[in-house]
Image (cartoon, rainbow, N blue to C red; front, side, top):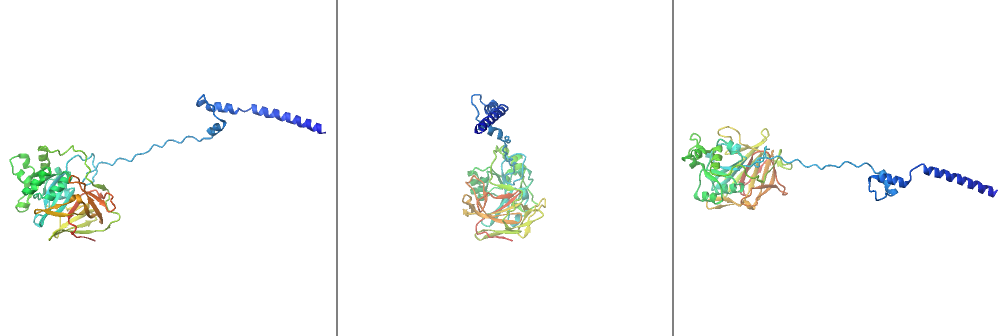
Length: 381
């Protein structure tokens, strides 16, 4: 019986072996599969069975992601932030503006990109208007003589300065700084026909010294005729940044801002009142709202900046240590924040910063700047 069982088992094993061989012959060998799968690779190397299995199990290759780039910022006017078709390649022009009670109302101030107000000597307070498009301004003034503070600011902005003359000290200082500057009062009374188109006097406006007005297109044409480059300039960073809404998010309410510009015993208040309909601060001084003498347009500003500076005197004229920088305030959209300001040298423009050191973003539009001593009180509500 044991033998029969053994023979039976042997027969079963033989039959089972034949079946295994037949099944093996019915599928490709692993070597064959490896050769087939490696046909697209090197003919010199054999792919291992494990690698073949991994190859067949790999998912399809995912598409490559092409990195995107941020769109380039469109060119903008460097002094007011308005979007331009091409980068600004011109020169900045500056014109002195009389600002005592007897000399108001102003003319052409609303078309300035920046209007700066300051004491220039003793109790005399004046403004300096900066323009990128002075050729579009038919009348600017009333125009008065230049001062050391004006000369310094024009050097910071490489500006062409028009004025009604000045003392020997102030005119020599302007020349020594390398400024292109023109006494439009004497030019318009001279024999040169082109120079006569730089200014005019309106005797119906005010008495003698307060009725001279610059003509923007004539000033620019005269500067160009003198060989001064007024276009095709390299692009310059004037240190200003702009946004569509410059309202400081963390600002305090400031519907009315009064800065009492002070130097020694001389004091002069300027008040800016926010007009929500205009979206700007309206300029008030001498107990009245400022309007353009010719157009009747309200003088209003998108941005208000107060620069506290170290101001002393050189002779009788005020001078500021602009390279030392300082602090101040910025207002837009009915809100105000404290700020810092700085500049690198006599030839570099002012930069305005938040108190944490980030570049300040102004609202697109014109800006009023009061330049005054730290003793100048600022009240807002």
